[in-house]
Amino acid sequence: MYLEYWGLQKYPFENVPDPEFMYYSPEHEEALFRLVYAAKRNKGAFLLTGEIGCGKTTLSRVFIQQLSDAEFDIGLITNPSLEPTDFIKEALYQVGITPQSNSKQELLNLLNNHMLENMKNNKSTLFIIDEAQLIHRETFEEIRLLLNFQLNDRYLLNLVLIGQPELRDMIRGFQPLDQRIAIRYHLNSLNMEETKKYIPFRLEKAGQTREMFTQAAMDEIYAYSEGVPRKINNICDLALLIGFSMKIEKIDADVIKKVVKDTL
Image (cartoon, rainbow, N blue to C red):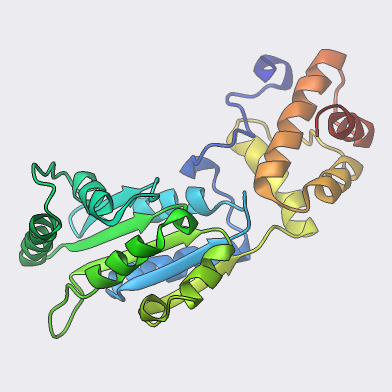
């Protein structure tokens, strides 16, 4: 709606996990580095937590792009709120296997055979579980048991658990799995300096390099968003819409205050 007015090619503040719009704060860079290291070094289990809306899901998509299809067989589970047997079936489905059986043992045999076949082909099996704080406790136990699929010198399965801050406490309360987590990292919200870099970064990715938000406007955005990228996106998107309706040249602090007052 407002693209032509602002000289943009794409909507810059969409809340979708588009790797093209991934902003690399120092913490996001560190998290990605650790993820890639854990996968390539076959570390077994990795835990990534972060505040709601801080960019975990987008980071996971960037992480997948960093891994070669020739070296990794990747299953992405985005709705892990499943009973153990259904969870295993979903894992199989995500690596291209549609099981006909509901027997957990047969499903586990299928998964084990698939992982062994990958190993023979010099590929690692990697499962990424997003929103992992939704996992049932019984399913956590099943996940722990999946990590028992290993040879003397390597894991057959690598696992990345991604979730909100409470996931850390959930796993700490389940010692058998907690002890299997080889690497863990927590993402925080952006600070003010990072927020002021994040906004023009998104605009540039969308095709506009001129300054469209005043410094005072970005101060207000940070104050209301607390540096949470999802909140920043919501405020900035609505600010551009209101700025378009008002036919102004630049988003100032008054526009941000109006956005917050009217919609948030």
